[in-house]
Image 1 (cartoon, rainbow, N blue to C red):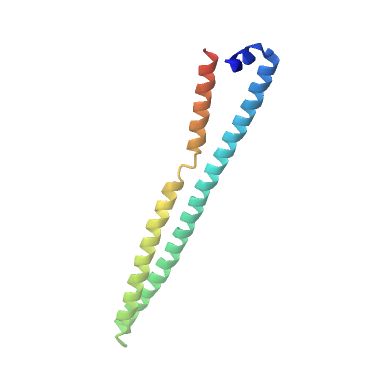
Image 2: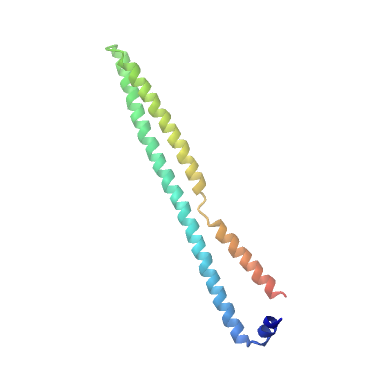
Length: 134
């Protein structure tokens, strides 16, 4: 009860100043939250790009090994061609796994929008609007 009496007796200038300070603090906090969300999203994108790069490298080695295996098979020099094909298949399987993992990371990163911060700002605006209409 005492708090209500104290609020109603405060000059309008003090209330406006307090509103300005609280609004400024609220906006700074929301911007900080949006920045943290964007940095998290960027981290996922960087990780996904690295995994895609790894997939490309593994695929390149896999294709090289398969080609070497085919060359050895055609030459019929020694049974080493089978080993080259097995190594190539394993490298291509690894490339597929890395590509799948990279795609998952990219999907988590996109779209890079600060959803929590936006929801917080919407809620803050609704709260302020609700307080003004009372």
